[in-house]
Image (cartoon, rainbow, N blue to C red; front, side, top):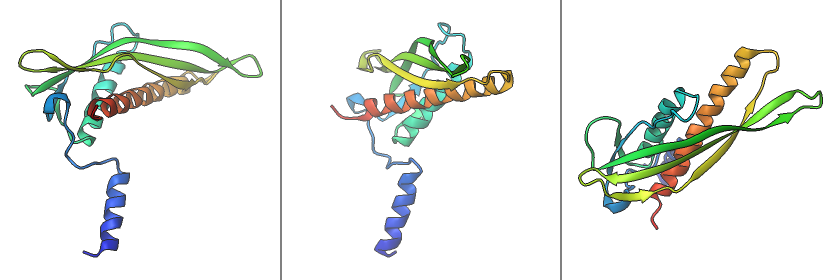
Length: 167
């Protein structure tokens, strides 16, 4: 294989978000069980599944062996502290055009054998704009779900970046 072809393959491969399987977790661990978060502090039952899915995706892309069932070397727990609608953005016609959603959460990685905390994220706060469709509830609902999905994706990417970055 020529150097030019190899460069193209590596460029395409990295553009897809995949990385070499070499990341480790704190404590030199390589595998994690992701526990679905309790989202009872929010009115969003879908948020738990979205966060779990996005955490698994981001961990897998970082080269971590991940599952949501069974046993592993470590356990990753997410505590959702809140999902709040912040000040609405009002359009010129004095109608709400968008609302900012803020997600607050903390993550803890523990050793599966003894429960010892290996890593804590500290407070993570993320915001995302939720566009409002004034006279179209279906479009507003679709926009709300997309906003939650983006918040979940951004939260997972931030958490995994912090988790897999050596200190």
